[in-house]
Image: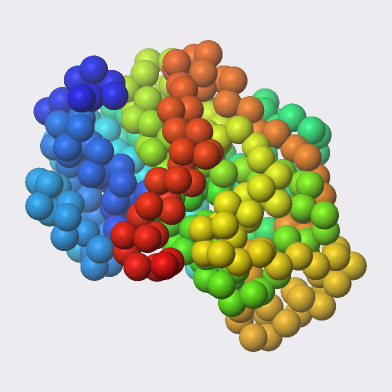
Length: 334
C-alpha cells in the first residue's frame, strides 16, 4: 500500500546515487510500493540486481559526465539527488568539493533544463557544524567554514542548491539526516558490528552524549514526502529519529553480537585518533567528533511533522530488531 496514497503512481522519477544504501532502498520503495517509474544512475551497480527485477531502469554512468546522463533527465517529474562523497574521515578536499558541490550544481542545471519541477537533495545534520546550542532546528545557520570536510561541503552545497534553484526555476527540497542505520547500512550498522566484534573502542567517555540514529525507512519516508508535498518547496528539514545516548546505541549492537561495547575515557581519545589514522582502523572518530561525545543535543523534526505530516513510523527499538533479524539472516552474526 502506498505511503503517499498514490501521489507518485506512474510518475517518472530519477535517482542519482541509486547504488548507495539510501538510493537502493528509495528506488525499491518507489518502484514497488509507490508504483513510480524509476530510473537510477550510479557508477557502481553491483548491489542492484533486485532493483532491476523490480522494474528500475539502471544506468551505469558517472553523474558528473553530462554526456552520459543528460538524456536520462528528460521526461522526469522529480529528481532525487543522492550521489555524494560520503567519506567523513578520508578523501581530499578537492574531491569532496567536486562530488558534493560541483556535481550538485550540475544536476540542478540538468534538471531545470529538462523541465523537472522538484529536486530533492539529501544533506546532513553535519552541515550545521559543531552544535552551537542544545536544540539545533532548521533556523540554525549552516557552517560553511567548519573544519570537517564532509559537513563543510554539504553546507556549501545546500546554499548553492537554494540559490541556483531560484535562478534556474526549479523547486528544491532538502532533508538533513543523521546516523542512517538498518539492513545493508555499511557505515552505521555493518561497520559498528565489525568494530564491536573486534573489541575496538566505540564509546568515549561515559556514553551519556547523544546519538542521532535514523532508521532507513524513516529517511525514505522523509524523502518521499519532500518530493510531493507543496509545503516542502524551498525548505530544508531535519529527518532524524528521537535521540538516544551513545551507550544505548552501541549497546543495541553489542547485545546483537554478544559483546560488551568497548569504552575508554575521553582523555585517551587523542591517542586513539592517531592510531586510527596510522592503522586505518576506520573508527568513527576525529577531533571534532570527540568533542561531541559528551554533548546532549537535539535535532528536532518538528518542522517536518508540522508542514509535511511526517511521522517516525519505525522507532529505534523496532528498527534495531529489524536490523538484527537481517544480520542473522545474512549470517553476519550468529
